[in-house]
Image (cartoon, rainbow, N blue to C red; front, side, top):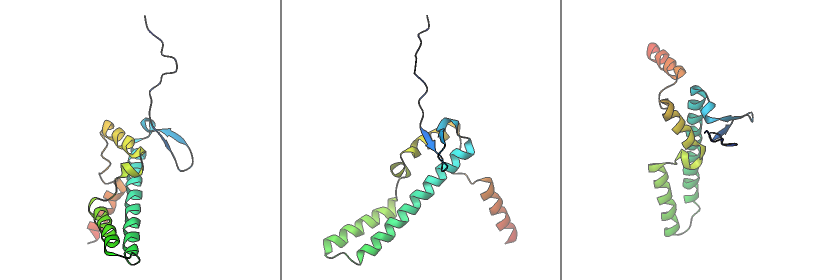
Length: 124
C-alpha cells in the first residue's frame, strides 16, 4: 500500500532574477547557473576591493598605534584571504552544489571569453 505524502515536494532554493521572476535553482539552465555564480563572485570581489580601499583610507584617520595595528591586520587578512562568496551571498553554496551535481564547470571560460582570447592571440 502506497502512502500519500500530501503537500511534500522536493525542496529547493529559489533565485530571484533582476526582473523579479522567481526560478528554482534546479530549473535554471546551465548557462544561467554559471552566469549567476560568476556574477556573485564578481560582486564579492567588488565588495572586497571596496573594503580594502576603505581600510587604507581609514588608516589616515585612525589615532593610536593599537587602532592602526588593528586596521592593518584586518587589511592584511582581506588581502590574503579575501571574502568568501558563500558568506556574502548564502544562495551561492546552493548554486555551486547544483553546478557540481550537473558536472558543470563554472570556472571554465565562456565561449565568448574563448573567442575573445582567440581574436587577441590572432592580432598579436
